Image (cartoon, rainbow, N blue to C red; front, side, top):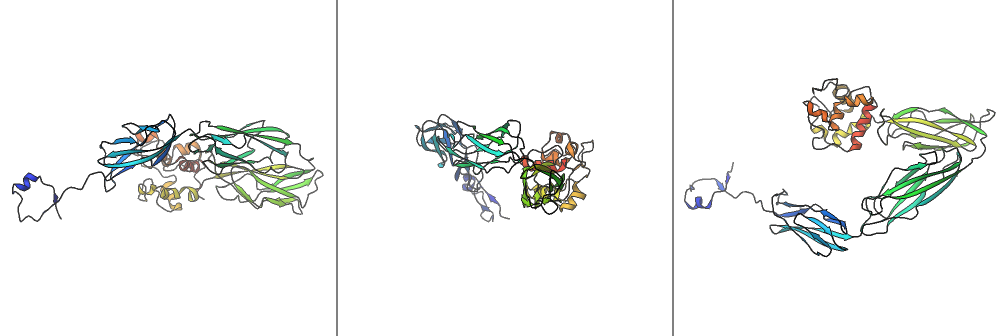
Length: 447
């Protein structure tokens, strides 16, 4: 092994180093700053606002070299100023380069200063008309542009609010989060069987915009439908459960008869997802000789806030001319093998929880479920029946599952030997944890 020493010059000159020594004398690694990394290479700043820039001195290995004195400068103080801490203040419209320097090494950030962006809607009132119980009208489009300065980014849609006595008849989506963008408004009105006037408001937001949120109002006029000369009833496929993203076992079907009980053959029946976010195939099916029409398939989805039961409601509506529509209900859940087990590798949880006992996540889906995770007693001294994953479903199963406590970084971990959350640095994204939460609330199904 080669010993690398750094000796004072006076010691070297004194002749105390033996000429026959085979040790190699060499300086310590260079700790000078090689590059300066900025917290942001470019950013927008509204006139009159301030933003903090960060500068990070790095050596040639890429390691941070803290404790260095950093000087800051702006290429045009009439556009933006910067203080000794890196706080940039917008003064007037224009673009400047902000420079951070230490030890002769600099980093730069481009700062564009201007007026705040403004949300501009191509229309704020969207009228929609239909007949009660009939096929939904086509989607409506609204264009979103920027009528102000800088860039309009971070566009989002808020919760739709309804007036007029009925809700859930509108779906809104954006094709982009930066302007220009297109908002698609899709009426889902086939389930409305009462004539009348209804309204919905869609908030369009962007934190950078001076006029956020802006609002679009959709007015719905429902005229009376054709006379009900037919009777539609559910023939099969109602009240089913299925794993999220899969089809229900029995394809929903309806039977149509006239008011005298005679079946109606050859009548087109339309099946349309009402709630839940799933989809159908074979959405339009003709009634057969027995008056029965069957959808090709119905895929259910687990979306939205986690229900107390862990099972997410889905609805499908069937409609036909001169007949009152009927609604099918189903529930979607997250399964272990399909939705949960793959997360352990995806988020590197198996690095701390392999298959060597305790909270083990590295086995195959079936083995981990039955032998290492599900209803396995935890070694942590919680008391009160805490398991790796508790069975039975509902809120009590969630509260008694060590896996969920660790994912949520629960405060109760501090009183047990298992003090660390999973992962240790910070909780996983809320959507990931909610998938596991819903799975446990639903009774921890395997399929």
